[in-house]
Length: 340
Image (cartoon, rainbow, N blue to C red; front, top):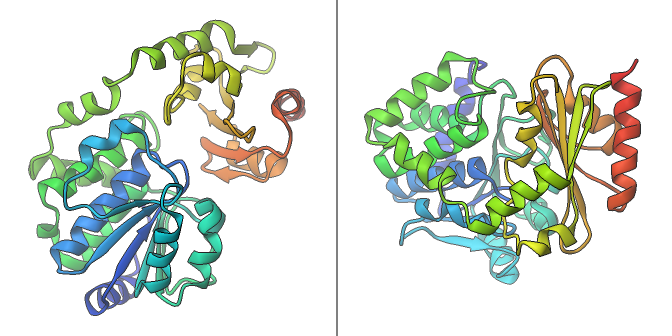
């Protein structure tokens, strides 16, 4: 983790404490880090007496419902687009969390950029879009946006701002974005933050159970189907990938988030060093997730061939091709890079 600029912290504190309406927005297909960092930050602001709304471009998986409290003000824009757009237009401050480029909020991109509010970014991805933001906290060496939120708010407002309900959200984001502390967690800062979260009352085993022991029967069957029928292994490249069409998902009545984490199974094989998941949504849009064990930089790979990006060992992209073409193109691109 890099040193956080104290001038930025002062500016952040000044903006938050002097404003009226705050909107926190995160990326499309919100994962545990997006949900945890957004809700944790929202509760910090509300404890300061600042009215705060969280906007997600589309729905988060149901197994993060345990984090949501009755007084959380959450808008899912895919279900309430006009309300989400109005909140952005009326906001005094917009805090963008867990994304580095406005395109990650999908159809809300122009509403975000055109809003007259002061804008703050808290993110841990490469190449942040800084042009329209008043304060940018960006560090791709940090474990998660949730950990970043922890350090920003404690530096700005003191450790007492981390209550149990804030800590549960932040812990969830750290836990999910590090694969339960199995990657992206080489810095001692993540353990220092986590120790404090446990100290204020987080039940780590209970949170982990909510996240990982709440699979529906169909989700488990879909996982088995992927491993048995939709896994391609290339020993010469030490690479493997899953390919899951919309028809495959319909067979198991797949719900939002049912394929989350599936890509990580590729790296569980002893001799596989690079993995991917190609998935097609109900509208035919094809998304790709990339993972790497050792030296191969999937961020550079995703950017070079698919105009994607993320982190060195975990990245993603949207394909311009249909599902079948994406599969063949992926194999072709990996052969170029892995068999040099």
